[in-house]
Length: 500
Image (cartoon, rainbow, N blue to C red; front, side, top):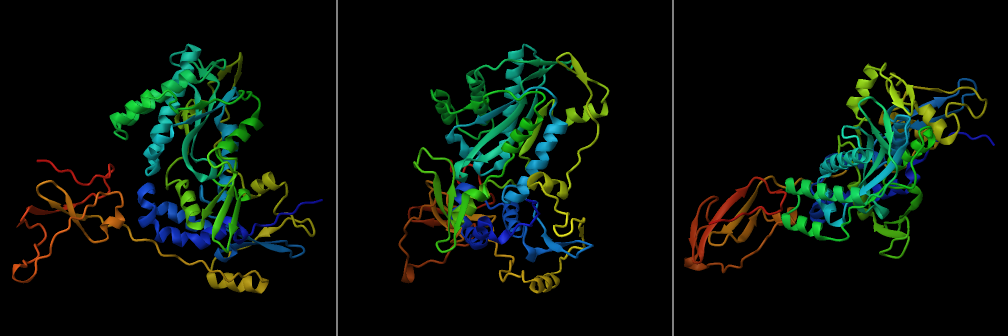
């Protein structure tokens, strides 16, 4: 049976329905409910979620593809090209990047798959600030390369390493860990590859453990007390998995499959179900040892919040290259392509052509096994026409074809950012917080200490005028001091420091 390409219907997706019904609830209730553990709302992440609603939606614009012989046509909607929140666009990016890693990054040597995880107690160190995961990537790459040098007895050897940052676990729980595709050995200065035998990872895990704790302590992301506690644990939680077997030097398909695996999207639409009556999401995954079941039930806004955590911020790189596979090293090899690498007594030369992105037609054919520009009626090659982007023209054409849907996407309300300056009223004797201005400052800063001291209001002739801002007025039990804090978003969540 011949297969024919059919564009997807975005609004039938459970993710689209969940975002459409629950995204506004998530944004309007973000600061009162979720700021405490997610930090300030990232505009780039919120924009990515809103753009994914327009991905594949005909009401947001389309391209007409028509056959010149039989006039058969279909409408091809535009995509959002967003990472993390759109499984379709994320999968397209993963396929292209996996082919690029196989063809232009990896050298024809054996490779291994490593997974580096950290204990649960350290996950909140990276949760509010995803950029901190860059330090974790550097530690993983340097630790692995030093360990490979020690195993091969080559102090100046260089390994080829590709790292992928994952922040998601089962049921979209926040679980930062690093997937690593590395050569099963090192290259020496003569470009000769030295293979090492597979050994246990306990020594590598201990090195990784001590380096992470030391670096976090240097950056003051953890306290000395926490570091001593982590060093004293027998089951430390710094786990490393190196897979079952190495990937052969000539097994390009296995290398590409592995690259696609650690570049996958955080969610799977096949495991997600949306209930429009109860506004809940049923998400299925592996059986959990905690809940003893293989599914989790989310409210719509909770599922959007869980997905929001795994959307990369704008400009944040989730894929990184180190050692022989770094961008600098690959660029130098392309400029001097005459230098051969000696691998197992055989030499080869690297191909100098630049990276080429596959066309949309090639991607569809690789995934679905059918040509999207081949007419299903007469077999001729179909041609794309001018894109339709005007809102009035979009509606007229869709209504004429019976494809117009009444749901219209509009720009929604975005919650107001917290005030940049908060005024704290302190007691001059012990520094106790008496009140905050404005009155809703506590709602914007749920982690800040707020203690309301009850005071008897003077009445009648004993009543005094309200003190002006910055003025010190004597009270019966001390002084009243008003200060302005220009940085209410202190990293330690302690905006008040009182000393004698």
